[in-house]
Length: 245
Image (tube, rainbow, N blue to C red; front, side, top):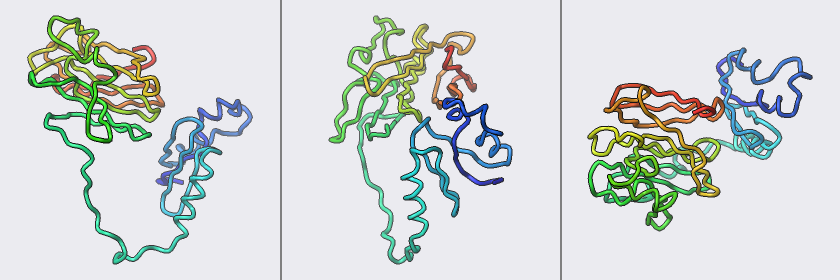
């Protein structure tokens, strides 16, 4: 198994069904020990990995997808002459700059406009199939101006990301026009796309960030519940425990 990309019933799923004490070993842990590149998906959801002729499924919900992957492997190869040339398809365009584009599993798209000038319609928007945009998660949080409380507003959003569990994360460095961090403004928001509501807010202040910090990008490790943020203003990496904030 060394070097193979695969998946299987995860340790977390074993524990959830109380089989961890009944089994001689946990499959995920053992495969990792043997040098496999183990890729896990969300709990109890279909997830399949294909590495050459090796097809693996994570759990019973993966059965149909695993079978389809096997069928695809059994099909004869398509000669190069029969393959249509690839082409780029424009999905959307904007006259104003986006620094983040996030696509949910159901196809919903979200964008953000950094406040690098005064010409910012709103900080975060949902991009609709017809190309129109609307403030997200609502208009109220997108109407920041210096007289308003930065803790309650999107000041200068730099990044939007959808994690593997389907939540949208909004990163607000609160450093408009690169003129310095507005105290109380820097934050990371977690949005439930089913209800379109903010369900978690993590705030940043010294010593984690400084007055010239610019939190630039974020990646979410849903398994370990950790967020990794780059700070391009300070040349630093900020690591956040999402369970405790």
